[in-house]
Length: 607
Image (cartoon, rainbow, N blue to C red; front, side):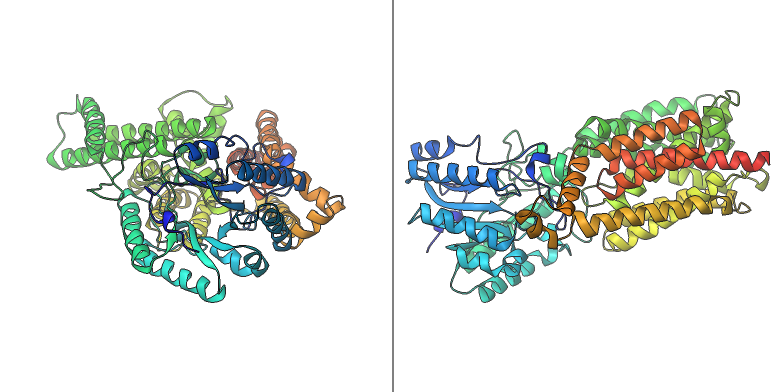
C-alpha cells in the first residue's frame, strides 16, 4: 500500500483524530463519566464533506476510551461518515493512544478494529499510538491494515536531545519494521516543541524545532517513509493539560503566522527588541533609588549597575515566561505573587547597595507572629514577611517539581534574584543577627532535599533544572546558617505522620489507581469493589476534591492555629499530592506546615 499523500502538507490530506491530551505514560483515566470533557469525532462530522468538496482526503478517527457505550457510539458515527463520504475518507483510525492511557486492553482494541473493518470493507483501518505500545500489544498490529506509530523524541521516557533525535527516529522506525513485518508503517506523529520546559537534554526552542523538522523531512524523503508532522498550528489551549510545551508544536502560530520552521532564518529571541525596551525601562526607573546617595564610590556604583541591569533582565524574562505558561486563575495569581516578591527583593537589594547598609529582617517565626498581629509594623517586619513569602513560594515550587514535574516549568529568572540577594545579605550579617527558629532549619532542610531530588529526577543534562538546584541551595544556605543550633526533634512525630500518610496514598495510587493489571479487570467487571474504588478516586481527582479539601483545612488550621487541624490539613494535602491535585495541595501543605512548625516553636519557647 502506498501513502505518498502523507509525505507533504500540501498533498491534500487531513488527519482527523480530534485533539487529545498526552498524559503521563503510566497514568490511566477513569471511565469518562468522571472526566470533564471527552474529545471525539463528535463536532467534526462536517469535515469529510468539506474534504470531499475540495478534493481532499481525511484519516477519520474514532476516540476510544474506558467507557464501552461511548466507544460504540464513536464507532457507529465513524462508520456512518465513512459510508456517506467514501471519496474523502482515505482510512479510519480506531483509537488514539488508548493503550498508553491504560484505558483499554489490547484484545478489546483488536475487537473494535475488526468490527470497523467488517463494517467498512475496502477501507484501510488502523490504530495510532506511541511506538513501544505496538510492540507490547502484537494482537493490535495483527488486526490492522497498516501500523501508525508516534515517535516524539522529546516525550520519550528517556528524552532524546536534538543532536541524537534523527538517529533515534531511524533506529525506532527500523526496529518497528523488523518486529512487525509485512505491514506498511506510517509515522502518525512526530515533531518538536518550540516552547516549554527542558526534559533531561531535550530543550524546546524555535531553533531546535526548525532543526528537527528540517532534518526529519530530509531523512523521511531519503528513506521513503510515510509520515505526518505534528502539527500545522500552535494550539495554546493544550497548555491546560500538557503545560507550556503542549501548546507550541505547530509550524505556524495560532494567528497563522509562519514561524519559519520549514525554511528561512529562525531566532529564539525574535522579540528581543521588546524585551530590551522593557528591561531598559525598569532599569532606568530604579535609578531613582540612587538619588540621595551621591557619595557612592566606584565599586558601589559598579555593584549597583550590575544588580540593576541583571535584575531588570531577569524580571522581564520571567514575565515573558509567565505569559507563555500561565493558563488559569491559579497560575496567573502565582505569576503575580512571584513577580511581586522578586521585584520587591530587587528594589530592597538596590537600596542596600546604594545606602551601604544591609537590611534587617525578622526571623520566619517572627514574621509569622507579625502576620498574626503579635508585633508592630516596621521595616524589619516588612522585610521578614517578604522573605517568608519567598521561602514559602520556593517550597511550593519544589513540591511541584519533585512530585509532578512533567509539565512544570522552572521559574529560574524570578527566584534567582532573592536567592542571590539573601545569600549576599547573609555573608554580611553578624552572628548576633542570626535567628533561632525551627522554621529556618526545616525550610533549609526541605529546600536542600528537594534540590537533590530534582537533580536526580531531571539528571545533570537538564541545565534548567541545574540552575533551579543552585537556586534552592542558595536559598537554603542562609537559613541553615542562621539556625545551626536549632533541633528539629519536636517535629519528629509529625515527620513520621507525613511519611506514613504519603506512603499509604502512594501505595493506593500504584496498587489500585494506576495498576495496569486492573485495566482489563475493571473493563470486564466494573462493579467489583476495587474497580469502584478506582473510579471513585478518579472522580475525586478530576473534580479537584483532594485539592479543595486540603486548602479548606489549611485555612481552618491557620485561623484556629491548632496543631490537630494542621495535622489534618497535612494529611489531606498529601492525598492531593499523591493523586495529581498538586497546585492547591502543595499550597495547602506549605501553609499548614508553616503554621504547625510556628505553633510548636511557640510552645517550645513558652515551655
